[in-house]
Length: 214
Image (cartoon, rainbow, N blue to C red):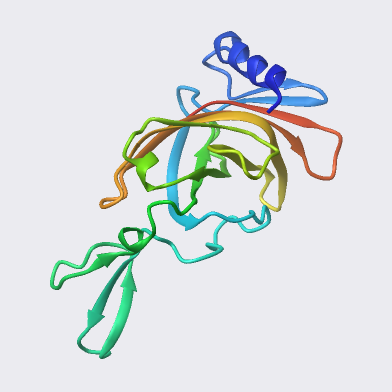
């Protein structure tokens, strides 16, 4: 973990004016994700067996989502999966069958509407924890190069420049805290800030005060 950028993020959180959505500081940009007229929406969450991440795939789960429920479908005459607990029959959530010591990763896809109502996308990952950790939230993760380190944070930001053009930023340092997470209902909340490199260009982005709740 790189301590200096994380400390810089913490300082910027206090220094950044609350009214600004985007502060230009060429060649770097600073984004205040919690400006008064900004909105963060949770699009999807996925709890997976821990694995390396594909930063180009923001929407399709890499493996089975352990938040899914398995039940026996009387019409199909076989087991099926659904995203919520079936109310008409008994179901089993896949996470309940996972070994207690299995390492897990939590994937959170967010949409951010800035002060101009322009939509941007974020993909957050918290990895390196197990089921017992989830019973003791809040959990705080940091960006870490070591794939064996516990509670690792990773993020991708896709910032819309216009209707046909995006800037993609990959996390190089940051902090993420999972403030609450209900496995059964999918209710979730958290806060994050991170420093990132723009892919394909010598440019950096600082993303501050990200807060989400579902």
